[in-house]
Image (cartoon, rainbow, N blue to C red; front, side, top):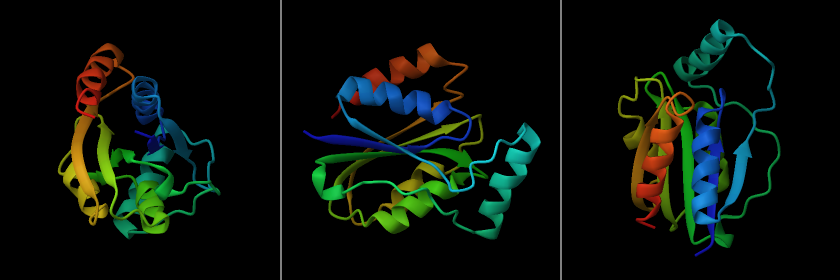
Length: 156
């Protein structure tokens, strides 16, 4: 089964989880980047990300090459911003035209997951969503994250 892991990561937590999933499933990896990839301090990142979520603005992404029809399984991962999947993932989903595919989702958070997994699944309506998982502070809990990924990936 040909698999793609598509994700956005601002602080590296989702990148760690995505890399682990990629390794276990021998998947292709697509890291999304916004056109505005400025280095920001912790407080500036909070305001930048929060501002997008509350204004419902979708950031522009740097160009990427992705054809959903090339894959049997598409795994989408996002950090949680203000209780929702990060805005760059919303941009990707709105532009990628993923429909009728087998998909799985994951979110990375620091304790405020809310209903972000359900929201991510809703964004991917029209697909067969086979599974979803969350990772709490993946960088701080790397061993726990790896164990969860290993158990989760067995279901594919």
